[in-house]
Every structure is written in C-alpha cells, then in structure tokens.
Image (cartoon, rainbow over all chains, first blue to last red; front, top):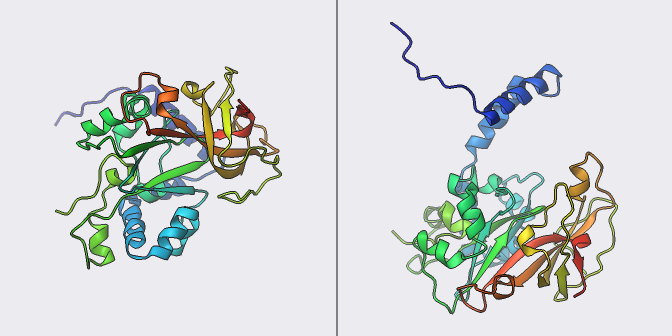
Length: 197
Length: 105
C-alpha cells in the first residue's frame, strides 16, 4: 500500500526546536529521556491544580489570606510544587474583577493552569485586553456593570498571576472536591466566572 | 518596606514606597526590554514591592543581571493611559516595572 500521509516541510520554529533539542543532546547537556519526562510532566499539569487551590481558599479563610500574601508558599502547603514560580493571586470581589494578560509574550502560571489556550497567546487578546478589556470580556460572554472596577494585570516580569474568583451562590455546604469541579481555567485567567451547573 | 518575595541576590535598595506616584521613563533603548511600550511615559502609583530580581536586559546579554533590580507593581488609571478609554473611570491596569524604568513625576 502506498504511503498516504500528508507530509509538509517543518516550519521555521519547528526546525529551530528540533535543532536546539538535538544540539543539547549531542553536547550532553540533556538526554532524550529527560526531555521526554519534562514534556510528559508539562502535559500532565492541568487547570485542576489551580482549581484545588481556589476551592481550598473558598473554604479556609486563613489559607485564603496566606494565598494572597505569598501564593507560592500557599500552593506548596497543598503539596503543589511550584518551582521558581512567584505567584501573585488577585482576588475578585463584588467591587473588583481581575483579569490576566501578558502583552509582551505569553507568561502564564503553567504550573497551576497547564498549557495556555491558543487565544491567550494571540495578538488579538494580548493587545486588546489592556486597551478595551470590557469589550474583550463581553466577547467571552462576561458582561460587567460599570460599578465593578476592572483590574487588568499585565504579566511583564518575574511574577505570574492567577485570579481567585468569587465563590458562587448556591454552593453552600459543598466540599472542596465539588467546589473545585466548577472552577474553570477561564475563571482563573479572569475571562469568565464560575457558575453552578 | 516589605517585599512580597524574598530577595536572593545582591540587590539595589528600593527607592520608591507603596502609594507613591511614579512615571515610567519614556525611553526606547534597544534590546530585550520588559517594560511594555504602551506604558512608557505614563504616571501610575506603586501598588506593591515584589522583591528584587536580576535585570532581564542584562540577562538577555548573557550577563548576571546583578545587582538585582527592585521590581514593583504599578497601578495606572486606564483613562490616563488611553484618553479615549471606553470603560468605567475606576478601571485600572497593573504592570510590573523594574526600578530603573521609574522616575518621580
């Protein structure tokens, strides 16, 4: 049977990635196994990690305060290793809605939220989120009244940001696991809010 | 003034305090700059002191970036940054900026 695969030449960046990876292996700086393990670890990180942190903060006020003070140490309390990440957690209130963007590149708290969605890295989101956040949020289906202050956080340097959304009404008495199940990735970026299904 | 994250490098002392008004330098040097272009020249207020970190402009040149630069979060009023901003008056934008990019207005 003839080969029916649809092959295309590597793009510029794919070629750069392959070249760099092969050079690192050839020079003995890393080996293939270490690279595979790191890629697997990266794929294994999902927004469920961030959701656990949010749910804990909703039920434990002392934890919530430690989280706002030093996000990195608070995550480590939950056994979530956040190597070299300096996490800033920003809290939504009835008066303030927070949203995260990185206009310069695509800085993102991967350790807590996994691989960023493509739109987060798009030029459209990155340029418009600082310029007309209310219009961008409306496109995500989030309409906020003029009485709510919008704080957009441009993640430009050594900090990484996560939004602590508000706990929705109708979740009284829920345990942490059930609470975590309604905390979406988008609500921790700040382009959505958790809803009770 | 307490930093949110501890400083692990020989660092410059922080010279701005929380709540102080600052202007972002309106400069355009070449190289790897972590100060977004759109915020240069604008006036904001120090929201917090994050700690001190090696200067990324130096790191990008394979130097050690030391002494580390104090890093702040600066809060800007959207209407100051974009005069035709269409949202609420209270809306703000917060950006991390290294000390050497800040001056007293």
